[in-house]
Image 1 (cartoon, rainbow, N blue to C red):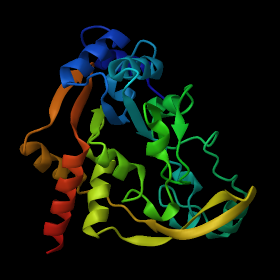
Image 2 (cartoon, one colour; image 1 turned 90 degrees about the vertical axis):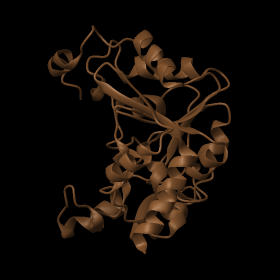
Image 3 (cartoon, one colour; image 1 turned 90 degrees about the horizontal axis):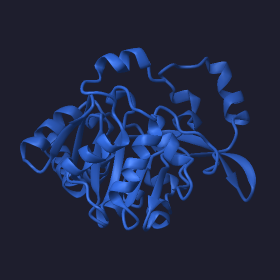
Image 4 (cartoon, rainbow, N blue to C red; image 1 turned 180 degrees about the horizontal axis):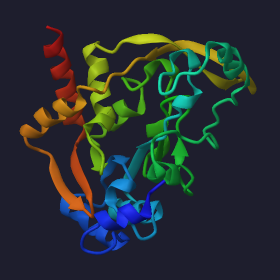
Length: 270
């Protein structure tokens, strides 16, 4: 939840409004018809008049009826509790969590630690959501259904996931107050380089209408190197940036980011 007193103190030049966000997006280079993978932090803006609604409305207006907006709607709380670290739970809880946690439902399962903007998008009219029980994406706009699905559990954020389809349509990545630690496009590159580690995972899912605990191999991602990777990526050029309120915002091609991460990972493994 945004601390409004602190948000007001951090916000220079008056409140962040929908019009101000739209102007910032235009300065970044966002245009009608753009296909955007958006990673966003509402609190990063400072005080936003209208909150997440103002941001979502500005995004929709900026890309227009021929554009596409995609955001993560991850549900990591539906994972195997044996892997939980922040915080861990007692081992004698694991069986109850696996057997009693409601099954992932794309229509109603809330995302976790993704932010208010993505959550509002998830519940907005016209938004569709993918089927992955941990790593689903929501999309609004032209071609939304074909981007978010299919998304088999074993593809994670690699080929066969929405990220590959965004790569194929030459989408752009938009950071609204977030840093490269959130850059899911980098994960696509890591998968292609073959450096992603996997571990036993599972999720409560509906199979033929019945709730089941489904076991599978899931990724054990490490985003610690991503800020350094992002700095090197930016040094090549091709990233535009502006400040909207208190938020540092960036726009760059998803394909270039994924390719860079694949090359970085290959070099690191040598």
